Length: 140
Image (cartoon, rainbow, N blue to C red; front, side, top):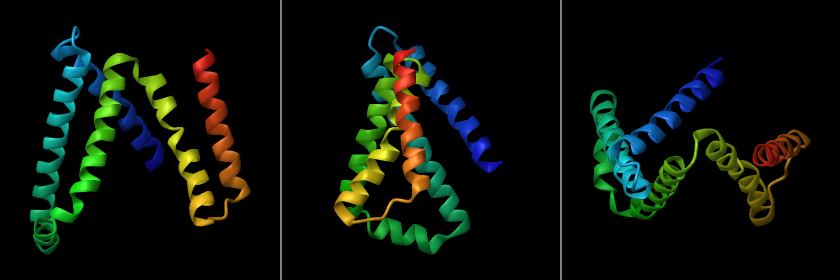
């Protein structure tokens, strides 16, 4: 039930992000998407700081103390989010999400090839279903 609920809210969020970018400036979707992602990430950062301050101040202190080592990962995450937001500003949410979900089988294949992780039949079947779903989405 939690998975379905989170998927529902994720769908709402994708559409909200798309409409936020279009509401800012539909003639310059890339600029609007970058502004939207900056606002969303600022809101997420503030929410996380408040939550950690309220629930786990030791973790908040540790995060603030070790901010430099996380800059690379943070930059990669911000660039990935910017890519999502630009895609959402240029196209409806459903095909963007369908294409984005392809990352799961790619990550599984990379884990198998790079780290010798063993893929179960269930993982292979799920990855195949994702690839087929994305192909069907692009065809129709």
